[in-house]
Length: 127
Image 1 (cartoon, rainbow, N blue to C red):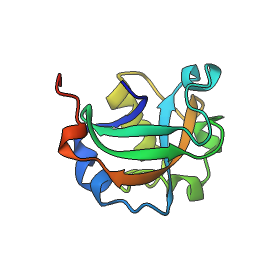
Image 2: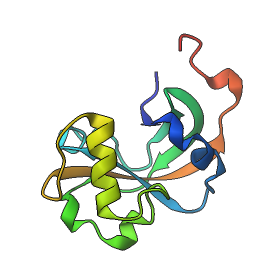
Image 3: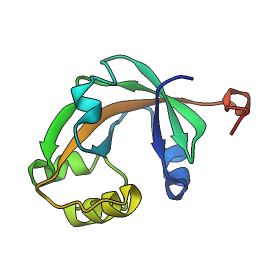
Image 4: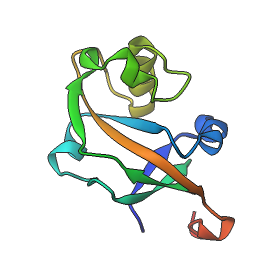
């Protein structure tokens, strides 16, 4: 199975309507992805929603590790529309990962650019 960036089902409409020119980011709590260099520049990965492949993406640059309070407003514009500020991000990460998250928590930023939409046959038949 290819490496993937997975989004929860609430983001399906947004993920399928995103363009293929703009840089996007995924934010994951902690440093495990960063420490293990899980994604590398120019690597093609699956973009999944609720664990089902909807499109491909290419990783742009190296992963970044920073505290939530260090994330710029400009960087947050590359995240999901419903999380336009740090409080929204903190609430989402806390709920989605079932962890206490605050602005001093470190997060890993994964920058990517969407590629073509996946065909239904590309989906994992076991899901």
